[in-house]
Length: 117
Image (cartoon, rainbow, N blue to C red):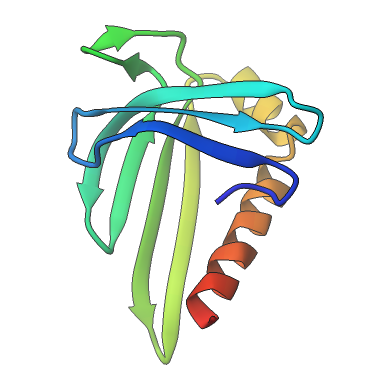
């Protein structure tokens, strides 16, 4: 899920821990933002954790964050929780300036619409 003006291209996604993920976000003007990393945890239908600190065959790369996405039953619905953990306060601030909260809120709205369809 990405903001509507952005398209996500998944080049490789293996969901078991330690497996690489490679993709790109393509913006409305054609700008490309690579997203390469690795799953650290993957619990089908419940939680996944990924990082951009590692890519490919356990190759280190400049870390930005660890992302944690979880869903769990709650009453008559489902609780969705997304968190980002950054290596530095500067990275956290940069993510905030990129529109992190608004963008992840948009993704949550898209996920809700998909689930209710």
